[in-house]
Image (cartoon, rainbow, N blue to C red; front, side, top):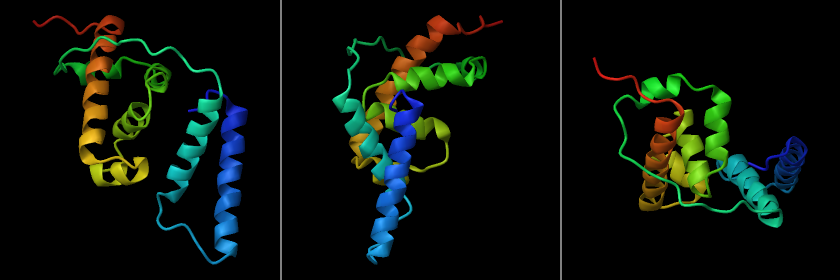
Amino acid sequence: MTGEASKAQDIFQDTLREAAFLVANREPPADRYWFFREARWRCLDVVAQGVQPEHATNESTELSPKAPEQIEQLEPEQLAIWISAAPEPQRSALALYYLDEFNYREMMSMLGLKLTDLSRAIASGRREFQAWLNTTVPAAASE
């Protein structure tokens, strides 16, 4: 999220120190998502202090039934780079969505979003991703 490994490592260490401090004061993190939320907010704070990319209007298109085949042709780094360029909270929502490890309730808890906001971020991000995917990895023509 920060774009720099050293910043990410510092944030990770700061988050662990905060957790240790809380435990030492008998105030352990409330749930298992605390670490993710805390690290995410710290990352967003660091990014907000740095140079921000220009937010361009991204093209969007309807999702293609061939999207899974198109995604399989991508290098994992290509997907990561595309997602990392998305604005917040869309970036975090898409990252969690494509990890395919969390249900919507867990994602809402980690991101601090309501269902409608999470749904909107994922839906618009997927449509923008499909437009990019169509130019990067065109779907094979129907036979």
